[in-house]
Image 1 (cartoon, rainbow, N blue to C red):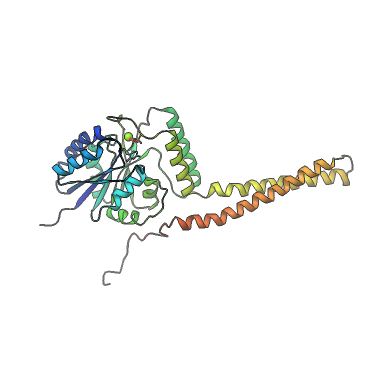
Image 2: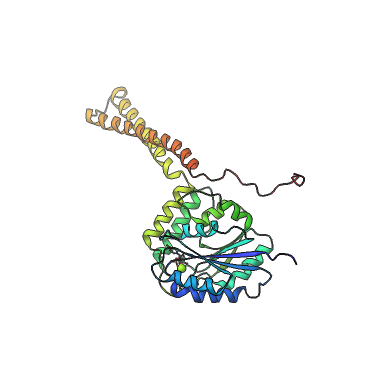
Length: 316
Ligand code: UDP
Ligand code: MG
């Protein structure tokens, strides 16, 4: 009999002791009809302060499909996902899913279905945003700015609930950068992707750990790791200052010495000239930014390109 392909579910859990068992039940229910696959459930305890880890070990004891890893402290969801991904040696596809049931396990068959059709990334989009208008506004603004200035396109309302093929997985494992937005990285790889929509239910138990600080931190991190624009803006500002001061200086000189109908104090010349110098400093900063930018992309250690397919290598 041919080997059954394996699909691994990866769930980060931070203080999810109340949700884990219902989550586990829902997942078992959802994958029941998909018995043509080997299922593996990896639960990552991200330094929870409640008994999340006890529950995980209880589950690993009772079901051989369940695996758990526990991180030494709370590293945050993005890193927890990375830890999950790197601790799986061999699998055919991986599904990232929150343990708080906000990512409905019922959707798993649909994810798998699209994967079987040949999509290497099956991502999801929430169709309704959360009820917090400030968070809504923040996230809308974030995507607007991000997509305007960065090299990859982030889909609004996209979530971390997604399936990735082993090929994508292999690539993701080579990423070494420390500050990361997981779904940004997945999108960056550029593999064949499809979106599925769902509406996010309320969290089952406990409350969301992402507050304003957290989310704005994530936003700034993603912005600076996908775009060099914040660095370059100083240079452009400098050019603008240089241009305007040059023009004003010219205007002052012409009106005073050529046309002779306007007298400016020395102070006025001084101020304009000083601003001119300031412009030079800003331009210099912008220039440095370009160099720093190169270093920045270099130290991220991202792979330069990804070979998705090869032809004519069969006889190697
Ligand atoms: N999570 C984590 N580490 C953290 C914060 C959250 O592993 O530091 C997990 C959490 O247990 C849940 C998922 O990430 O499974 C999403 O977290 P949350 O529900 O707080 O975020 P939201 O749904 O509001 O985006
Ligand atoms: Mg949640």
